Length: 263
Image (cartoon, rainbow, N blue to C red; front, side):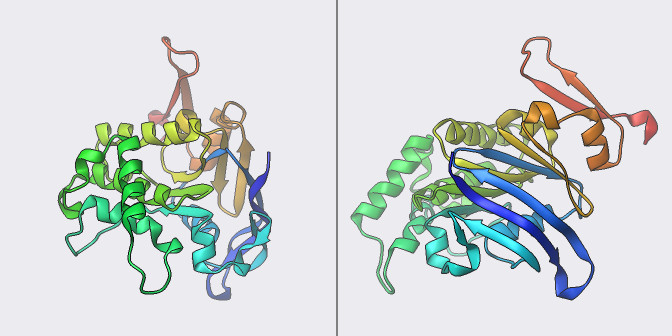
């Protein structure tokens, strides 16, 4: 498999102060579905923003498709990496189709407006995702789960090689969480490269081919979920003893809970 994202001996500090993490190494290959887990303050979002191109490493290298990320223009990077943030608001009453069509922006020249082909592609993406019925509805008036699906469709409209998700189910109810995770599983099954941060260990078991556990200072463990998602590793990640359970109905289904008596 081809390496799409490489983080090499990376360190990051805000304003030259103490490093949030140091000597961090990870690789995302084409077709990987990677889930990054970690407690609040461990640097997940900082790492996400470095890979998204929003922040620069203090030390080390970050390669995207074999090139240093700093060599890319914003437009060039947008053609390789799509981004879905956890919270997004639009004040102007765009239709959902218009929001999805914004994903074509990296392919338009200055002052050029989207054409019929861009609109047709946006609608086709929505149709493929099963959300074509939202096309004419104002984005600002649909539910949080529907907005998240629209943003995923917008990222797909960029025709990227990978999509980054920053806590994609944050603030969503149980059903909408399930819809978003089902969508991610479908994208992964079609070969889309996915990298997501999450607070839920369940997400790693549900969608990832590779799991990264982060703690203070860097990575605690990384690899296949079955190898990495152990009670010991999760305990180190969240600083609490963890119990892992296996479903009686599905040998591939796992879930975990904290040892409440020890909190």
